Length: 330
Ligand code: SF4
Image (cartoon, rainbow, N blue to C red; front, side, top):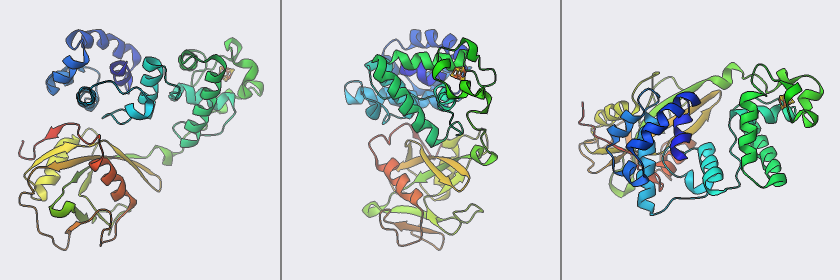
């Protein structure tokens, strides 16, 4: 279930379905997946793209083996590397009879139309509405299959551009159908909603659990604040490679361990930060300069951002370990 959900993220279902049987043949059990070489798992994702998913799936398998048993609730599953709220809810619902509704794009679109909500896809408000509506459906039938049915309805009947209201079983309760305005829902995303960035950052700890912060000098809205070194990634750029370069810049000679992604918004930008945690020796990191400083992340003596607290939670939390990268590589 986890494998199929991960494969279907950002890949057409048909292509994921073709790759799935071969993946299970190569890794028939959780133990087989966890003990495999990471690059072998990445190779099994060949043709699916977004290979970071394969690394995170491998890390999740290792984390489950380390736990001793499968986490079964959506909350617990969401602590695994690479497992977001939707995947966690879907695996909990369909594999463990969980009761948190998984809300994907199809469920969101159907919700927006049934309830006539002028909200854009991907917005927090529409996600909340989707969970509430899907939760009410579950209350009537008490089986998570009702959520699968809505997903299927969204994929085949209540499609983005050609909703077939005449053939829809929800027609009598659908506010958009009642006003023949299905096309008006959900709201189009504004240009601002679509502006997204991916960053790599390094979290390097020194004596007394202080953290190396660097003054932001680039043109982002964080200019002048102090944060763990980060870089805005170009499309397709390798986050681990960029993190290694950042670590080398700071003189770090230990290993780097990837933590779970951190989400942060600055005005109209939606940012995903991939933090890499320094593990091992401090190496030859600078003792501090006008641009770098060792600081207590809970009480920094320099101006910082709420992003520092988010990074601290991700880098010091239980699900921090995903995979290791070595700054000496390349
Ligand atoms: S009646 Fe039309 S708009 Fe409403 S859920 Fe069905 S297909 Fe979508």
